[in-house]
Length: 434
Ligand SMILES: [Zn+2]
Image (tube, rainbow, N blue to C red; front, side, top):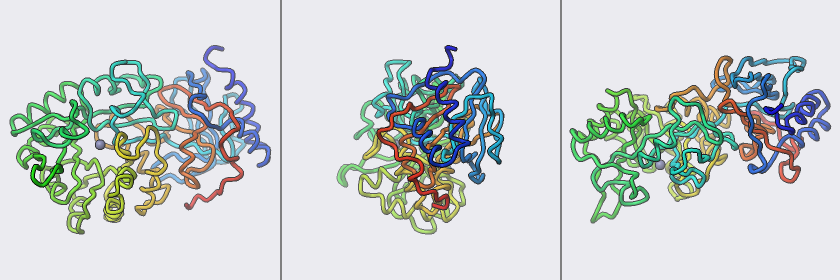
């Protein structure tokens, strides 16, 4: 069978046995399944009859993690989620997983810059993009030259091999000479709008070129003598109104109280970062009352030295009921491609806990503006975008560095055995309350 690589034929009975045998044997059997180096991962079409993922199943949202099986058909669709006793394990399908494994929705990163992903070559339509092997099933690029965004964004097409689903904002709209055109975004990452009329035409142009959302930047930065220009309130308002008229949402880069307030006045839909200037309770309430969501990007701020204040703001925002989404700001200080377990724990520390952080990184991020497909849940009838983890992500978020298998875009990626690195599952603390 050409659609079923050798290691899968081998993996099936192993996983089935792992499910039924005692803990010690199960752990040994799983050690042969789980593992370790991305370059040894093997990607293939889904087995024609389908595949079943067994373990503790967390279907996302408000669901509780429960032992069970998720069955995906040969077309890549979730056909059944069986929660409950072990004897429901299907006998006629390839089965991956075991009693220590977790089956969860893939992670969605709501803030990346693929221009800084070493694998994403904008001049090669078939170039890979980092993510899928680590369990990252969808990303939203918040700032790139338009030609690159057109190359990367998925739109309504099938998700290509070796890529996550990609949504994109194209270039960042900013004042002439404004952020980020005089720093990291000097090379086509920013587009200038100097008047309400120009704002409207710029948004219409971006929409016609296919962007999934609009990004605006409000940052004066620079030096006190030569501050960067910032979008005036009437120009910002024109951007938001034009975007909304075309059905596009607007996310705002605004790190200070002054520009957070300006963005709220204009009616933006989301903040692309947790602000790094301490926000007073009144402004926190305004964000909550407006229903404006916030993308975390906390870890990169810790790497840059402004993390503590951002984390305090994030905790206040969460306490006020603001939706926090998972975003790494890939390309900035301390970031790297793939799922970042540190960002998950920064989100957990806001008061959401580790399960809440997973919710933020799955359903909440999947519902971000511009994400036009359904990710973030495991639901019968939906295309599968899920991950098999070798042990509990609540006990140790670092498990995201070594998923056992990922299913995305009708393709199954299984990491091959390599016994050199991963701790045996039995050594892991099982503490779902973490
Ligand atoms: Zn960014």
